[in-house]
Image: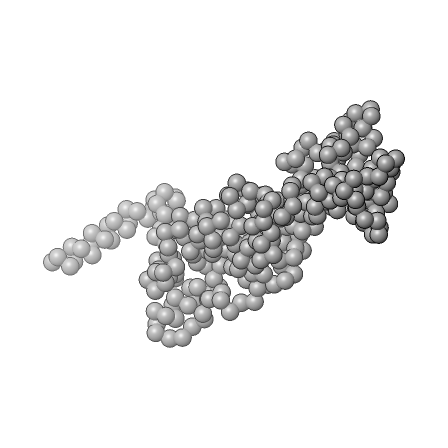
Length: 311
């Protein structure tokens, strides 16, 4: 009689719950899902690293299917022992892979990525980022620091950063991303400002001005005189002073022969008797002397007598 008792009990429970289900008080049990994230983990356990589980990708609903196509069909085919679609992203072209990422990351800093140099040169998101095995604290990068990711391609800039005068990038006080946005497509050199000078003023505010007397190349562009990635000259100058000054002031600028780099005059140890001020001696032209010894406020001056940036 036990089987019959069990059937009678189930029937009585169903009759009792029917009005509640009809009123919406008890939800009917949903049919079993065709695919779960745990199904992927059974085979692809190496992809479920601790870093991935803690990331936003790992915590998203049906996270695998957010990036990989035909996941349910692939899982069902593998369970049935037959060949099905392969949802791997490795064989996709950079543009196709980027479209996958941009299906979610289409706003903020990534909004203009397609217009940038990285996109135009077919750099894929996976070239810098790793979804399953990131090494960085933020950004899910393939390296511990963002700068290490950048210099894996930008070798010339890495070499400059190792020179005597440089920004504190290799010391870890700033990174390439302090000045550049690798996803930017609307600004020159992917910088984080409308112009190079505006970017420099974010830290070097004292050079912004306005000044009563302005130095034209300073107002035009900071990189007219400085190499932002590093230099073997003091203050990251592109050339040693006074050679840097002579690149513009090559007519003498009121000093007897001081600016004519192409002159055949030979500097003498001591100026002859009666020679005008600024006569080109060896000491004043090349050895331990520079224009900035007198023109001290070369970025601009507010002094009423500072037309030549001497104070």
